[in-house]
Every structure is written in C-alpha cells, then in structure tokens.
Image 1 (cartoon, rainbow, N blue to C red):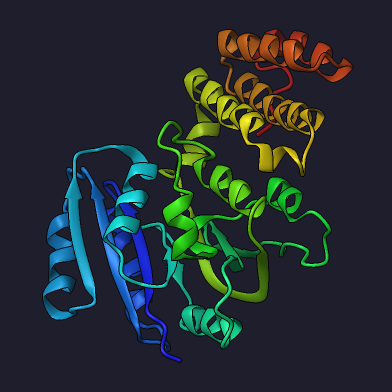
Image 2 (image 1 turned 135 degrees about the horizontal axis):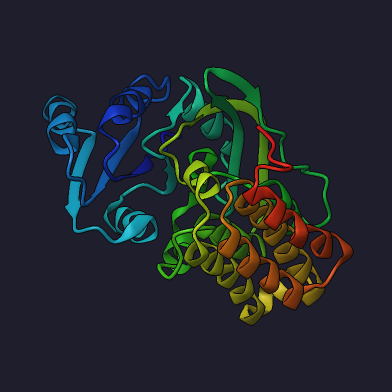
Amino acid sequence: MERLFSIILPTYNRASFIREAIESVQAQSYENWELIIIDDGSTDDTREIVSQYEKTDARIHYHYQENQERSAARNKGIELSKGEWICFLDSDDNYLPDHLKTIHQALGSDQGEGLFATGILRNTNGVQSEVPFLDNSSENMLKELWTKFLIPSQVCVHRKILVENQFDTRFRLWEDTHLWVRISARYPVHQLNAYTCRQVVHDESTVVQGINRVQLLEVNQYVSAVQSLKIDSAVMKMISPTDIRDYIDSKLRMYVYAARQNKQLRTSIRIWWKGMMNKPSFYLISELPKAFLNIFAIGIHG
C-alpha cells in the first residue's frame, strides 16, 4: 500500500542548514512524500534557497508567514498537509535514506492510529552518538517520553491525531514533548529500533543557547508548560502531581547549575528560589553559596 507521508519542516534563519535537510528528504528510498516548508519569518536567504528546490521538485511546497514560533509553524504545516501520516523535520536535522521506508514497513497494513518514533543519531561538534531508544515494554510510555524525550525529526503521527491534538502555541520550549505526552495519554506509542535520522547540535540551536545564556523568561515558560498538564485528565491518569513536581525540580536544578556556571548571579538566585518553592532540598541549599563563589571563578567547570 502506497501511503503519502507529509513532512513538515519549520524554519527560521537556517539558510546554512536547510539544503542538507531538504536533500535528505529527496534522497529517501521511499518516494511517496510531500515536503511542506514553513518559513517562520526568515530574514536570510531561506526563500531563495528553497525556491531552487521547489522549481524542480513538485513534491516540495514553500509557505511564508510572519514569525510566530515553531508551534504555530508546525500547526500551519499540518493544516496544509495531505498525507495520512505526518512526519516532522527540523531544518538543522536530516533524515538517513531509509527513514520513511522504515516507518512505512512498520505500519504494514495496519490502519490504526498512533505515534511512531525511529532512533536518532546525535551529532555534536562532529562526534556522533546513538540516543537511547524508548522501552516498548514499559507499562507507562508517557513516563518513557517524559524522561527520555523525542525530537520532532524522529516522530511520525497519524493525521487524525494531529487534527485533534496540535502543538500548544503558548510555548516555544518543551512544546514538542508537551504534545507527545498528551498524545501518549490517548494513543499507542511505538518505538522503532532503527536509527534513521540525525540531530545536529550546534551553537545556534535553541537548547545550546538556552544553556549558554539562561533566560528567566524561558525557564518560567518551561515550568508553565509542564504545570499546564495538570488540567489534562487523560495525562493525570498516568502521572501524579508528585511526578510533575519532581520533573520540574530536575529541570530547575539543571538551570540553577547552568546559570551559576555562566556567572549569572541574579538569574541563578531567582531560579534557586523558584526551586525551593517547588521542592526544597539539601541539594538546592548547597547550590546557593556556589552561585556567589562562581562570580569569583571558584567552582567553575570548563
């Protein structure tokens, strides 16, 4: 059965990466696909680069919109798509040649709805590593997603699910995990044990920038995204308020450490206080004097 896969590629000022992303789709061994590129207000050469591919490949479609962030861009791509199954590709990532073929073969003749994820290779400064798979034998796949994460480039979801459950446009961080968690509370999640795509970690990526210079606004948004799941009754049948508190605690610890290592004293103290209000601990108590010591380059780790 020839399924049409719709691939949603949101981009913003990634002209230096997008050629490799597009060409990785064109190199797919399974050829029944459409690539929908949502340009979220780029001011670089993205439009000119994409137009070269759009002119020669009818499967590639370009749509420009004023900057509205990734969630809105992906939702627009879903709206414009025609495929039964929808995949995602970040503009600085790329597919290996058998990505779509692997998913197509896993689907077989099954018409069921669900979320499928392949394995991801992570390229950091030229060093490639395999990201651990989700455990398909887990009794709680939501918690698997909660702790191990999936990036959009490894995910394929049935169209009906994404019509009913879209990316939450309130959030620019954790917006992908927020959606996967909501989906996993309602539909099956399948991990395919094959590495079929590559994540490229670079200095301009959101995650790296967020750690190199911690922004309190982004920390607050991250926490708000996690806390917002409390009102989702389907999600709360699979996790508890304590799970949410502990998850937020782990992330605030990460941000406190990053901020003090960056010598961001005021930011680290404000995040520290937020952590103490969420879940007081000896660990957090011990972090406070370190924030002051780091100002004098004491305890800084290279």
